[in-house]
Length: 137
Image (cartoon, rainbow, N blue to C red; front, side, top):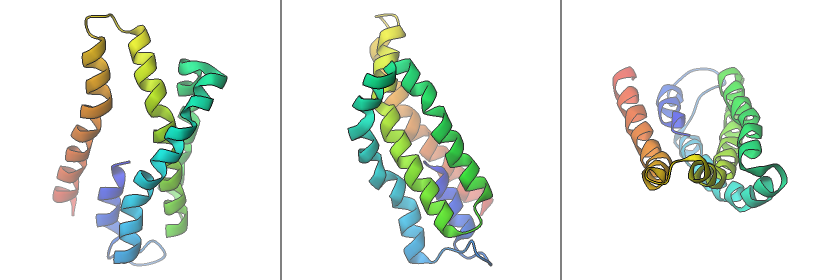
C-alpha cells in the first residue's frame, strides 16, 4: 500500500499516459485506504469459508495481481484499479493475520508478535518508502 507514495512522486510530472495531476495524485494516495474497510467487513466470510491459513494463502493471488497490474499498467485507470484491489485485499487479510499469529505463536510472545506485526510493521514500511521517495526523486 505504501508504494503509492513513491509512485505518485515518479508520475506526478511524467510524460505520456501515466501522468498524474494533483487531483489524480490525491486519489492514488487515498483509494487503497478508502477501500480497506470493505475488505475488513468481508474478512469474516473469508475466514469462515477457508479458515485462517487457507484464507491467507488464497489472498496471495490478489496481492500478486495487484503487483502485476501496477508493474504493467498502461494508464492511470489501471493503477487506480490496482490500488482499489490492494485496499480490499489488505482489509481482507488483517483479521486472519492476527488470529492465525495468535493461534500458532507461543503464549509468551503472542501479544508482542500480533502487536508488532499488525501495527509497527506498516509504520516502519511507510517511513522506509518516504525515505526512498526522498532520495530517488
